[in-house]
Image (cartoon, rainbow, N blue to C red):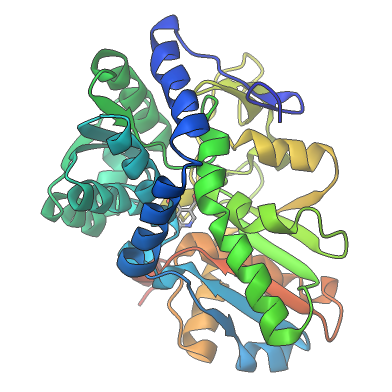
Amino acid sequence: MKNGYFGRFGGRFVPELLMPPLLELEQAMETILPSPEFQAELDDLLRNYAGRATPLTFCPNLSQKLRFELWLKREDLLHTGAHKVNNTLGQALLAKKMGKTSLIAETGAGQHGVATAAAAARLGLDCTIYMGAEDVERQSANVRRMRLLGARVVAVESGSRTLKDAINAALRTWISSQATTHYCFGTAAGPAPFPRLVREFQSVIGREARAQMLERTGALPDYVVAAVGGGSNAIGMFHAFVPDESVTIIGVEAGGTGEPGCLNSAAINLGRPGVLHGEYTMLLQDDDGQILPSGSISAGLDYPGVGPEHVYLHDIGRVDYTIACDHEALNAFQALCREEGILPALESSHAVGYVLSHADRFRPGSRVLANLSGRGDKDMDIIEHALGL
Ligand SMILES: Cc1ncc(COP(=O)(O)O)c(C=O)c1O
């Protein structure tokens, strides 16, 4: 990683007016973030407020059927119900130390919005969340949570009324409010330094999981799997395992319904390079470079781009990026509910869905570690509707 680039990807393609807050943030990453005081305060918040370390759960019933061991890193058990809070506590604390009084953030599934609202309340910061109007409708329970936690929720009506448009609205607002406001970006994408900053706060997932696997089994996992939206839970899980050559790493993008030509969110598999939201990355786009609408049953994966470090890891062949479709996620959702008593988020269900549908890819007797990035309560209406319940 050099100058905000991962290989050819990343960078900082923003209007001049956004350069000052990005450079200020980069400076804070060099000075405030590594200090022992900051690290101790963050560690305390993660442990005693958010509930780290999260458990590593062995799935005995599914493992018996699959003939390999399935292990889950339980980020669903964190406060606010997903991995997002690792990042929002980190960024909110950093913003406070930088002297900011307000947070703004975008949200898709609402998990990042809820986690930002909670971190803002805890640290005494004002909070405004931008959310595509379509997501406001399909994730209404999280909108209510954000409001109860004291955040203002702005429904963004422009474009496809989803995450992409919420990010545009938040970036525009940051231009005029940068003196007092930090943009708490929700995934390992966007202009530098966000991909590195978010990875920094999420890499606790893989560090913990690696140590827990070694402690519980005496060995590293053979496979590590995570769902990729913008890429924060996946890079958080993968980072510690990248140097471990024996570990096969698999990122799972959302393929939508799987019908030919359907809307999807598989930017690495089906996109082409281009610039969106301040970074050079793989994007779903048409022949004229116009961003195509993305689509997935899971709102949190519904994004036409992806973080630059994933594109780099794909380019160098270190991580295999694959696709799971809506029905595979629903199948995994039901399997985890009924076989293991776990109600996973639809995003995380894509990671497990890939494992269940491609079970013959995994060596008998091997250990497969999947990141369960969040819990599924927010998705109940969508799932019941999809399953005709
Ligand atoms: C539970 C959960 N997992 C995964 C994601 C996808 O985001 P990312 O790729 O940044 O982890 C989201 C996004 O909202 C989410 O809520």
